[in-house]
Image (cartoon, rainbow, N blue to C red; front, side, top):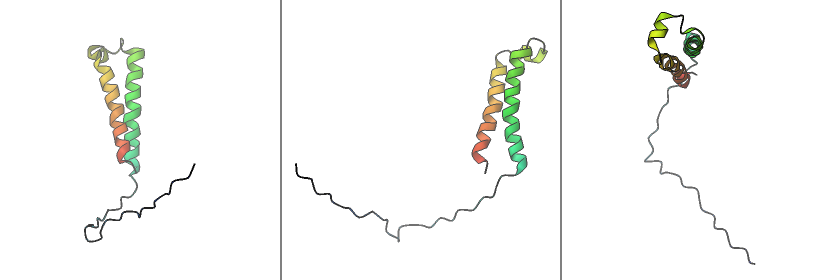
Length: 88
């Protein structure tokens, strides 16, 4: 069977008169305190959930919160996770 011919197309480049140069400000690394706070939120959320499972009946304010303990624990971990997006 005969092979079809392949047409080569030139790569498209935008006209130079339409491009607006954008200067991006170089961001340095994150402060070490930021990393400590970020990891602290994640570990605090994990600790909250572990304590809730192990000793919630013995801690009065956790017993009153009931199912909200899960929301608090996961919220703390999500805050730490969202902080990782700004970590450099």
